[in-house]
Image 1 (spheres, rainbow, N blue to C red):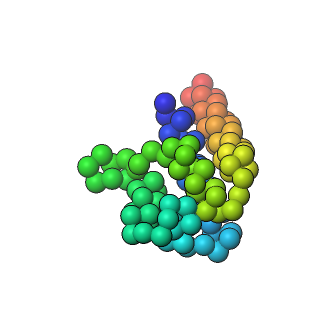
Image 2: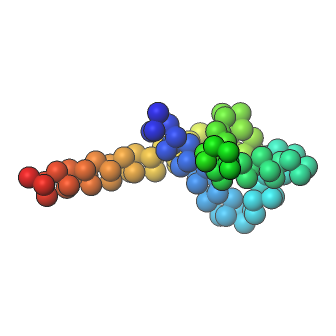
Length: 106
């Protein structure tokens, strides 16, 4: 399950990076994805920041991810590909770090 949560966080990071590339602030992205209301901004914030009661951010659904892609004007596949590539690189770095620690302790 940890890998799924890590991938979800990477998707959020990619969305933020793409928004920055397109010079969209968080409020603009939230309105474009979820409509022009105050709750849309709160909704987007809940995906990015931990909740006070649980210490975890709101989980990102596929539907919400799709809405964010529409708001960004990008293809869903493009986002998931970018996130998937970053995820693979992160896993490889973790494996390398783990093997280096094993060699040091041997």
